Image (tube, rainbow, N blue to C red):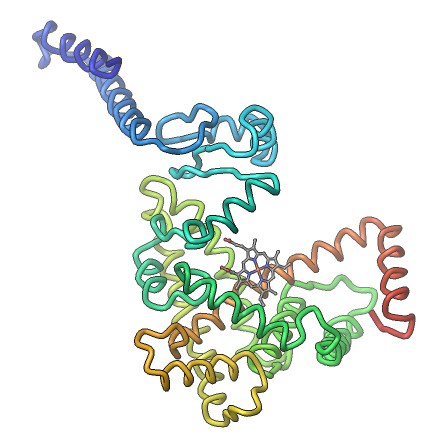
Length: 368
Ligand code: HEM
């Protein structure tokens, strides 16, 4: 109602003046401003009427809750204050999209476990066309829709556990990697500042490669260095794409970032992973799987033999699954380690506690 009143008033103003051609600059500016405000209100009210989201703080048209987030000082503070006002479930608008905050064990359990069929599929709605097409064709585990996601997720987790994740069976490879890391990065630079980003990412990626392909790469290997730098770059481009790409017209501002991400994926990372997969196919022993990729290829063969059409364990999907493990596992773990090192430098008392805990659980002969 209010909206139509505003429109009526505006058109009344235009008609009653009857001298559009003679309007001076400030009148034109006021009219443009009023028109824009009306259009924004219209869009806002159209959005509100089709709203089935939980209640939340008032959101401005286009800019959503950005002003309140900025005024709160941080997203965390904004969420905390609205949690006090609206409870465990509420909606806010940021980057042009509605976000529902869910907190507390019961609400999260109901959302992710009881209603897994509705909530496990990641939305590709706000993704770029390239990502949309890729995600539909070869989703890996990240973009897989439910129930395929459940299947691939169980496969990934159980085969990572088989390969030693969270168990002592991975310890020999881990100790070997730490020793090589110390010899390559730490010992030659004792008493000098050390740039840890590349080295920690390489070491982390080697551990993922050990589980995935039973392989590690030398720190001096130039192609390996390029892959790691590309993984880190792709991770930060991904964040930029998901933040700016969600804003109205945002995709136009990140065209070059999207192109660069495509280049990294299709020219640097996927061909290298394909090479490793081809090697695995050549000497696959189905009675003696060495790593996650062998297990995947065996499962793939099994599904093909059973005549399953569109089976989830396709070779193309193997590449994407490996790619997602590399992207999701490398930057995150290496960054967490860098933060841990920084905190221990800043808080030597915590460093002593960490060392004591390691010695207590693993024994003092451990080099950690
Ligand atoms: C400190 C280390 C890590 C952190 C902080 C971390 C954080 C996260 C977060 C927040 C998500 C959810 C992202 C979302 O839903 O958009 C995620 C998903 C994922 N992570 Fe990690 N991660 C870490 C280590 C790893 C490692 C080592 C691997 C694999 C080797 C890995 C593989 C994955 C995969 C495949 C997904 C997607 C899972 C799915 O869609 O079901 N992550 N990680």
